[in-house]
Length: 385
Image: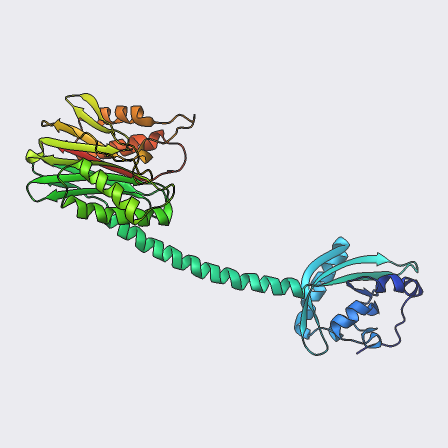
């Protein structure tokens, strides 16, 4: 209850006009924590009349359960001379108004000790915070949905990656890893009964969802085309025309290396567009099978009829197909591994068992690379037995 015998000190009355001009609530307590002054901003905030507030102590304003906390804050203010904390002001109607309470001990001109309290209304801040929390919760739910979708997409894309197999006189090992959850590389290792083995490595420009969708669409068309084409150069021309006609996209392109093995694996017909060269290791020497066509998909004049390459293979030969994510990696000095660097790694590992050779290539690139992987990586390693 208010204590009407408490009078506002003269020095405060002289400052009343100044305190009433402030935009924040101001309360002054005496040494017994009784209200000796409250400005109009505070009174409107708490819905009290001036005479109702004068003389009140904390236990006449706050519920009993909050008094221990208030006294702890008062002890901190007494110990350090000032204090600041977030709390609330209870209105007469029971509503709790969130506020920042800044308090400090002062000595008045009358020589007595007082507590000066500045109360800042933070209802708007709390409203915005609540909106942000609600928005963040919605964003988090949406992010979880996206991550779940990406996880499914990643599993689907991994299912499209080639796997190790043996066909006639050939053994094949393969590896695929996207730079992000999903990527734009794909590989095909497809036996055509006992007649042919088709091997395709493709790199779609960009990263992420868009590239993965394009890669999956081109992958499907590749499988369909392989049933009908007679040699790899025709595959490149057909896929280039397909992208130009069905899914044209400004600045979009893809690169591809394609090979068809016949005669039980002793003959390879090869064509590539924009891909880094396939590495052939034969009798301890390196031969590079380079692209004879530029990048595909974006330029109408690309993938014009190109000379295919016919390669005779002998037992012991090794072939390494890969995308540029394997060679466009940099060491701590900023030097790129490049095809030359990959050649050395391939040559050093070419006498190992095929699974060990594949792993040695990946380990060698990882040892060179400084930092995280920046591009998708596809690798297909073939041994002629």
